[in-house]
Image (cartoon, rainbow, N blue to C red; front, side):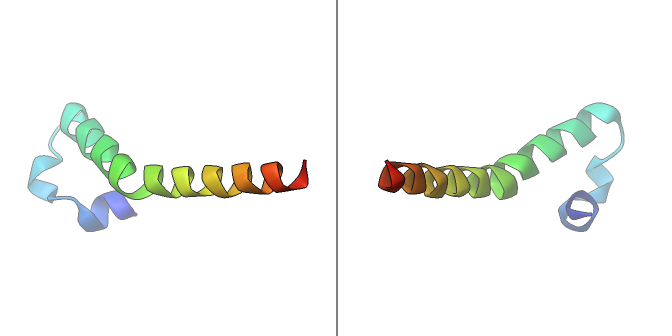
Length: 49
């Protein structure tokens, strides 16, 4: 859903451009969340040891 809502649809003309768009959105939206969750989990593990 994010891809379609946030992407410039004129650039989604072939698989290569779709892949590039998906990769860019993952880096922008999902990777920061994964990093934050991993940091939180790491802190919890350190405090329980």
